[in-house]
Length: 510
Image (cartoon, rainbow, N blue to C red; front, top):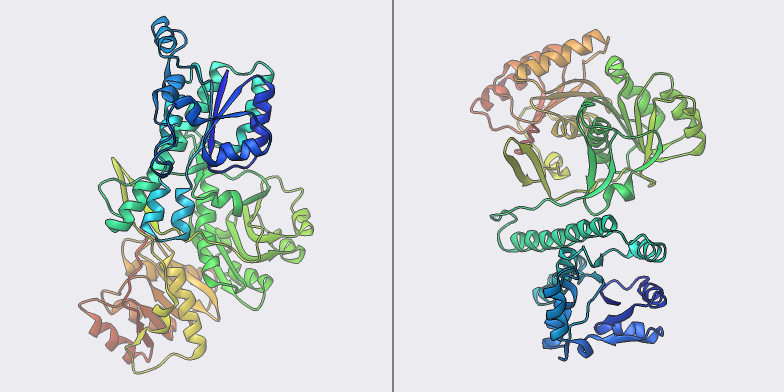
């Protein structure tokens, strides 16, 4: 029995090789792996002893050889394959353990194209694919975390067809993701990220209970182990819908850096937001915006969920709490609440992955784009269009309103007063309707809008929204501008002595 071992990540490889030796496997190895195994006392054969050729061209050619691929690929159940192997002195290779040149790690640390090219593995993927194709006879190992499992299966009669099939699937996932990373990088470098093919590859973090509805299956897939690292389940099980709501809430709360921001979301739309002196005050103020919608919602906390804040939140039913971190005392507050789910990022403040690109499924495919974000310069460099300038407090409220608007379904408008969202209209077919809806909701909640700042994620097409805002007592407005009727909007703002700013950047979210 033979095992071929050729790995870039050498974590745990010596012990794995020794375990295979103890089980009677002869070890074949290459380059740095061979050197390490010999130093660790493993009686390995160097690859050139099998291929009858030395490694060539700086290691570019070493395993691309019939003695290697014939040993992997020939079928043991076909007499013609067995006799051909015997005729050519090809010895079977029964285990292939390979992980690939660190291409992704290389592009993360250098822009040197020559170095990047040399970290594209050729022989490794070929061996992985060969072994995976012949999984009926060969075990393919591509993950360092599987070493102990493989040894246990070999020791206890668990090297079954089903086991080898599972390893085969994992191997093809491995090479597919590797090739996708290379293709996407090359498209990014030479075609602006929008080549003829686009590959979206993620790793499953966990299955959800079901999809958006009970008859649908669902799972969370992640890029670069983001959720494995940054979403710890402390209580309950995240559903598909919980995850989309968590995404919406965290994006807003985390957009304010180290500020004690609290965002409340229902059905992926914010229904409460505030940045006050501390998280407890922020939550109390955020809840006032729409206490009805907050029931059963998601609360994102840009900081620590402590016992005092937990006790306040526990006065109503919220389905999900996600915080930068959670104290044991806070967790204990919800111990008897079976339906409450709590998650932590185990960090000081909420973290965003800041993905470079965004995509959305449409029937028959997906649309793909550069990710949108609000730069602070958009607000600080916004051009005043009105006679009146906003006060420092109003400028802060404009910033909050603008960031929330940019992360809320279009058409939307957001009203903020004293760093608290006091009204919001979102997902409307008309911007006028969004403004009216927000004001009606505020009236129902008994909230005084006078003195508030107003933000829109796209331009106001007519002056009627400005007139309505003035009637409600709005004192400052921020929007992208760009309407053919901007002059009418500016005129209305001046008539009502409203401070008006244009950012020049639209933030539609569909």
